[in-house]
Each structure stands twice: as C-alpha cells, then as structure tokens.
Image 1 (cartoon, one colour):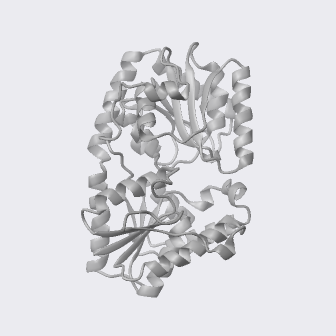
Image 2: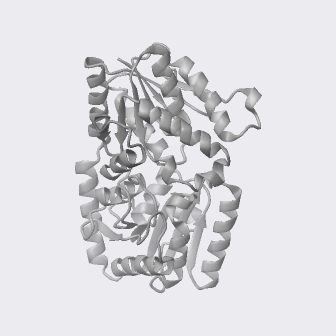
Image 3: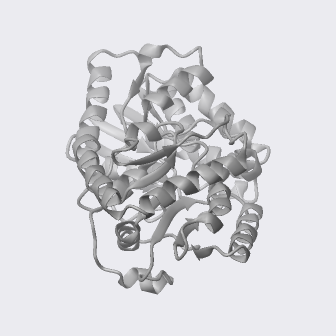
Length: 395
C-alpha cells in the first residue's frame, strides 16, 4: 500500500508540534507501508521525500494563496497513491483534490482548528478566510478524521456538526522516549546562557497567542526568589507579536523576574538538556489540542504545570505527573491576574517540595512510555488505512 503523507513541515524545517508529529509518524510508518512524504520548502535528498515550493508567479502573494499553489503540485504528485493523509490546513486541500482526482481515500489529522484560532488572522490577514475554507472542505469531505485527543474530537464535531461522528477517531500524539530521556549534560545550556546553579522553570513554545506566554510572564515576578524562568520561544507568527513579546520580557525583568529569553529554535540535544535540568516545565496555553512538548518534558522526568485546556488533561495526570490550572474563561482567562497568580502558586508549590516534584517526574516518564509510544500510534494509523482499503468509503 502506498501512502502519501502531506505536510507543510518536515526536517530540517520543523517549528511546531504538527511537524514533530509527522516526522515521528513517518519514521514508524515506513516500516508498515510504502511511504512517500510530500512537504513544503523545496527538494530533500531522500528519494521518498518530495519537497515542493509555491509557484514563482505567486511570489509576493498572500501566504495562504502561496500554500494553495503548493497544494496543487502536491495533488499532482500524489498520482499512484492508495491513500493520502494530510496534516494541517496548509495541505488539507491537496489531500482533498487528490481524493477527487484519483478516487482514493483521504485521511485528515486535525492538529488544531481554524475556527478556534481567530488570532491567526493577525498572521494570515485575509488569508485566514482561505485557511478556514481549506480546512472546512477537507474535513467534511474526508474519509477519516483523526483527532489527536478526545477533547479535539469534541471540538471537531462542535465546529463541524455536519460531519459524521463515525468518521472521527482519536489517536493521540506521541513521544520518542529514547530521544527524550533524562540527560545530565549541561553544555548546551551554558551555551544558551542558562545558569545551572539555581531553581529553573522552563517553557518551550512557538511564539503565538495560543501558547499563553504573556500570562507566564505576568506570573514570572512572583516565582519563588532565586528562580530563573527560561523561555525558549521561536517562530513568531508575526513581527508585531515578536516585538510585543520582547517588550513583555523587558517589563517582567523590570519587575524583578529572572528571565532567560532564548529566541533560536532548540536542537534536540539542547531541548533534552533543558527539559532534564528544569525543576518544572510550564505550559500556559490557552488552546492546545494535545501538547507534544508536555510529553517530551514528562519523558525527561520533569513535572509539568499546565493549563487544563483541550487535550492537556489527557496527557498530564493532575496530582500525579504535574499540576493543572483552570483557565477560567473561553479562549482567554476571564481574570488574567487571577490566572497568573494560580499558575505561580502551582509552580512554587513544586519548587518548594523537590521530593514530590521528583516523584511526579518519574511518574511522568512511566506514563509517557506506557501510553504514548510512536510505534503504537503508527500501528493505529495503519489500521485506519487498512480499514479504508478493505471497506472503501470514498465519496
């Protein structure tokens, strides 16, 4: 069976959770099917990876329109596939067109939903209407929609009530517990300017409003004295958001917070060292279908303090592998100051009890290994492919 995975992100150009997901899933699926990966950002050296660029005639056009131009090339290259599997709105239309052109099943993995990310209009401008169109057409026409959490499945059916619930299945994201494991080395941390002589709270995220990073900065001046907050934040949605965040960092420092701001994307070794060294990993997201980075922290035996939104409670077992903080609002906390205070209290609670934090860290690694292995997840995805080949439902 030939399967074409359609994705915007693929190494070496990975900046978010969806890219990590596709990279790890592809590694496992290659053992099960004849896998081709179609991605953005131009050619790759491996023969099974086809990298595409937007047509030159669209240079300077809206970014969403450029993505649609790339989708056309992807759909053409999918000739001969038995199944196409698209990830994120950037490639959803390519999968839908391939389904129509070749009469093959289209699987969509829903990593997020455009109706629940209105702030993306700041990044895409009028292209947000195009991204929303691509997602809607693809999800309603898909033969299967894979939601990365139970909460995500509920969001899919709420945003797209026309969708047949029987076509929506849940297959969680995963983590490579060989790649992410406790690492005592600190060479990468010293290079990044992270001090290794004080309590540390770490946060690794894309610079987008959904990650709730300004709420964490609001909490930073109230962390236990002597604590450093390491923010590894890259890939801003817009230059304006980058500027606003830098100003918020300066403001937090002015109020006495010890903030280390790392703007470069982390290498795997640097991420592993930081997650292993940190006393607490903080995830203040206001929208998070699952949150792979929480799994990565847990695999490195670090307790997590996170917002109780989306699929996070399906990953972080409250009181066992970390602590959850209610958002107290829909999409944003109704009382931001109260939310920041509650987030600080939970972090300080673990900083004040290192033995409890270590127990949570060990429990987190066990949970990551037992419930979120990529091999098991790839097997579930393969079962979805086989079910459609055995009982075709292409419409």
